[in-house]
Image 1: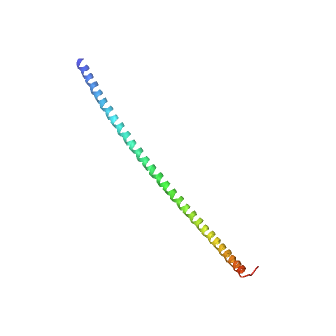
Image 2: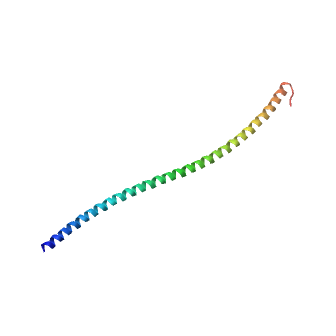
Image 3: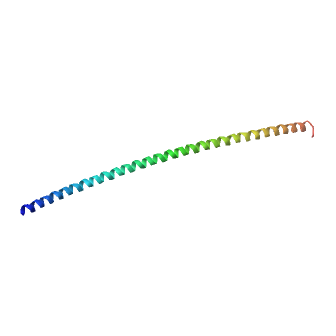
Length: 109
């Protein structure tokens, strides 16, 4: 009977040792899994930021192109208005000059 108790105790000690080793392996596996998940999360975060920056850059470029187009149209309209204004001034200047010369020469209208 002593031998049976010794064998049982020995088996329990071996089982406990195996259980401790398995717990240690499970803990290491858990640490590795957490490390891998953190790495994947950081990678996903970086990729999401990169995509967001690309989308923002594309939208900004589109907005910039639209603004440049609108600015060109505004400049064109401004140039056209300036030309009409200068033409109007030129006509009135010529008419005013004729009136001044006429009055100086004694011609009344």
